[in-house]
Length: 421
Image (cartoon, rainbow, N blue to C red):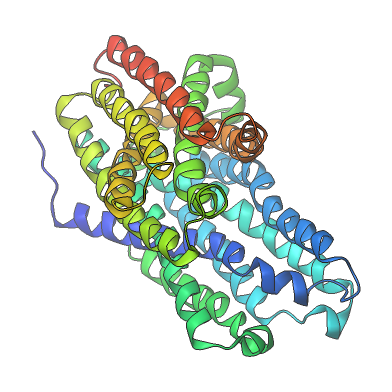
């Protein structure tokens, strides 16, 4: 059996580092939404309306994901994974840098929010190609028995970008007074992200095309028609499976990692600093969990490990919210434990990548993942918010319900046999 060599570890490291920086570029916007709302819209506009429009621009990035992902995946299946892997991070780095240099409403008027929206759409298109492209890239570089570890490591890098964004936002807010933050401080994280993104483009130049794509190219086995057409016609079960797995992934990330710190403050009156500190522990545990669950999937089967991990996710999500109603003395430990089981999402790309044949793998994964994430990632906060007046534990119950779906999907994958599990 083949083992990982130095080149494999180098590829994984560069891919994970680039993924972390690209994800940082994508989410840093949300940490400075309040400042952006004040600077990019008319001063006489009601505050609530400025906030709504700012979050609308943020959401536009998610809506652009499917189109960007499908287009880049199309060319990735026809002309190579590496080219699209480099293009995606370039398309993220340049808009991020430009946002940091963008004139505000006071300087160019209505063009400020219009240009901000255009740059945000470019970021969304880039991340739509980056995530599935990165999973395919690392999966096709390593021996098949290590695909779970590779995908889990890459996913840990992506989640590390969230933590990096949180830490940079904290540092900027501590360094700049409120007036200084509005004057120039808010630009710093975008400029940093853009510069590091351009460095990542250069680093990815040292990566090689995947062996799987090279073999298909040499044997003239590349798709002879629009790859997405083949995917929709011949691989519908894989599409449905990947979309349901993406629903599980989006529920775990959006509810337990992105929404929970704010919900702690609103529902349980936990100070923001305490909630954010606990969230940092959860993200660290999440990154560890992604790698470990991915490695366990290689050893014991992806379906079996997914089912067991989802049981842990459902139980710990419910336990965390149940304890928040009583006391917060063990908040860091409980949130970190829950974050670890959120790491079961590290298995999702392992299953999804192996569900599609190499000749249409990039297109199949990108279409299924990005469309599902745009739908479920966008609807999840709305659904949870609507349920909260009826049930204070709605976030935990929502994640527990999706965890049950994950158990069912894991058992289904296990029954399908060795191709996926």
